Length: 313
Image 1: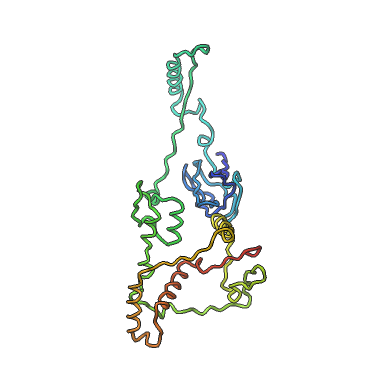
Image 2 (image 1 turned 90 degrees about the vertical axis):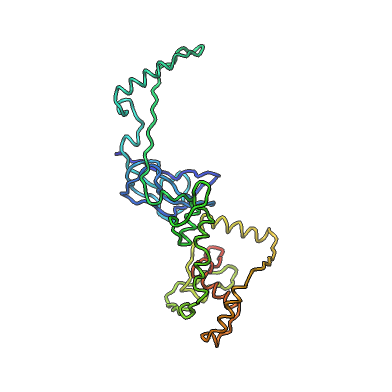
């Protein structure tokens, strides 16, 4: 057995670093060539790194959430000598007969003479047979890493999505269609209001202080320190936030007005007004919109977030 060290490769386009997001393997796992080892995030996208070796995972050298430079060792893999060392004439498959046939074929093919160089000698050429990738449950699903991340965020099982791509791959539209608004608002026809009323959350005295706000401005989370989670901004979000902050001072600001069809909303308002359960409630389109926002925030908590710049952000 020999130990092979896999370093963070250059994923291209001038990127010099990446963050280790999720390890797909653990020490002791058996891997084949092209099995996914780890998911990394660069300033442009999420990328899955395949294994260049066949063997057993020895040690993961970088923890999840750590940003490292290209060329940094990230994992070791224990491989068999034949899998890591170039094939020699003594250990080539097929023994001496295969070598003799290859050498003789090379000599016969070397009859053509290039002026000034003479007849070429025998050339032994071997090509390593690629290792076959084991069949897994996810092999049949073709989807790019950003699409897989979107499916995880939306809670969508890619195996249940009908692909519409030209090569049979799952597209962004397929995932969004599968997790359509019909599932989000599945109770809108018969809303169950008592189950979704505001919950009481007790903030303990030992709760961490709210994130500091720059320029002495009170933090929007100052009154809810016990319910605040501070998330470091890295990778794609870091590059996006930097560009957005710059655009706030360089790009013109505009207002956009969009007309939407609110027919079903108004029909729901009429039904709720006629319901005895809402006799003491002022039902309006604003109430429906507020309820939809609450659903959206619970489904995607990141919507209810605020940007905190500076050392504390």
